[in-house]
Amino acid sequence: MRFFIVYMVAMLLSACNPDAEESPKVLDPVAENCTGTVTIGGHGQVVCITDAADAGKTCQASSDCEGVCLADGQICSPQAPFYGCHDVYENGVIATLCVD
Image (cartoon, rainbow, N blue to C red; front, side, top):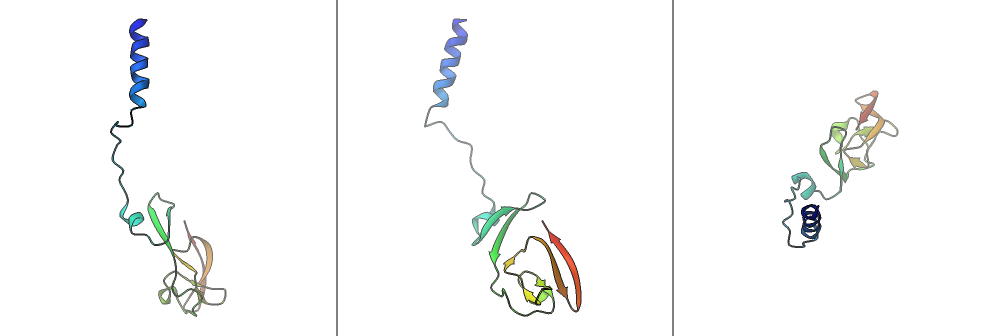
């Protein structure tokens, strides 16, 4: 029993040691270089969401935009990537696009 008490005290004291070596933190390159908001995408990948420079610009297809061409008003989305389900405009065709 005495050994158990000594062992537990030693374990508790070592847990409080400020000089204890921490495991290295691995930073994701996407997160390190992101100028917007970092989030985790639907498949567990790190994603950087930025404000689109062409937000609100008139478009005919998503290739005209940093994000997507929104069907409502045929304008470029405010962010890239643009998460959620939205109606997009692609060269005269309206389709629902869901990005998670």
